[in-house]
Image 1 (spheres, rainbow over the protein chains, first blue to last red):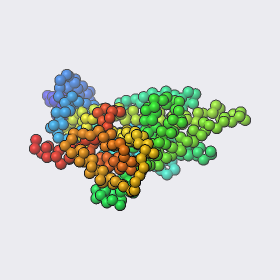
Image 2 (cartoon, one colour):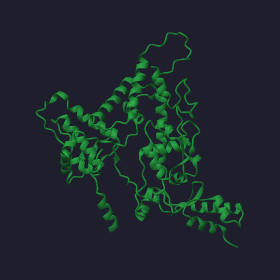
Image 3 (tube, one colour):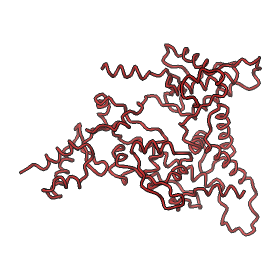
Image 4 (cartoon, rainbow over the protein chains, first blue to last red):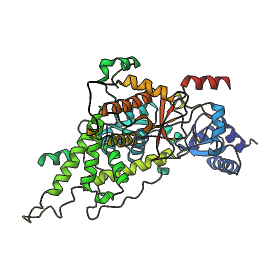
Length: 195
Length: 266
């Protein structure tokens, strides 16, 4: 009788990216999904105990062994890598894309109030965002969304586990937040012309 | 910066038309939020005259430093002035007051500021998460794009606006009439760079204000400030402050080469 929990542990140990539950089930076709789920839960319990140097994290809709934050300094000595760091503009752009995707460059630039072509290119190269397609409006602008790598990098299980945006106090009576979806792009210039 | 290499720097005739381009700006909304915070005013009731004046002061300052001003900053400047002029216009006497109650002309700007602030906060909370390759590690290799990123420094890195603010205080100390120029005794940025480097030699750090002695004219001060920016760009110095809004320090940067050698030896 093969030990399923031990097999799942081995698979997750060797895998070079988070493994989804579905993928595990495909790999372990001779077992039924319920058993695999049980094995995963048992592993999570074991690794979730205090004082372990490895935790079973749920990231990018999959499972992956990762180290706890309190050991980071020591791991840096081992890996000899420099800690990942992002510029404020990259983080802002990533945040806007993460919360508003699918989103166009014009929308990002309206929200940030500044040209974002360069930073978009950078985070695209780092594979943190991807082009989802084209928006069906005049000019057919490209639309962007975040990638699996984005979730992996920021230790997010999925997009729904992003922290909720801070509630914003409404401007009295004007109720501006109803049409969050449509940004008044180009409208403000129009108003200016009338003056 | 216009030059491709450091050589340009040392050609005197180019010093006058020297241009510095900084990419660290987060844009006019960021600047406005900065001014609102700094003045501790209510974002829902922005005192336009104060904020507009300070905003324009910043732009003027950037111009004076020959910094390339992104178009967005100018658009925002005109928007501010437009809003301000709207508030001065008398309300249309009730000839068909169709447009329900007139919206506060500042409303759209406030909405944008709030929206921007929301994403700025979201970006901060993103940065605070356990990041792969920073707080948490996996058995994978970091993608080469992420592995080669800048190290984190202990002291807070100074934002450009703060640096400009500090420089403005220096300029305020020198009132325009307090000196008279004798001839064209100009100083080049290259000269100031060398002077700053020799000041820094053998020291851990130097107070930003120490670079700007009294009794010097604006040209000298501006050349000094540009020299600091250029040294930052060349990664020869670091501009840091121990805490936000603390005093600003210049430190000699540790050369990349030394770092690598130390790593190899260990």
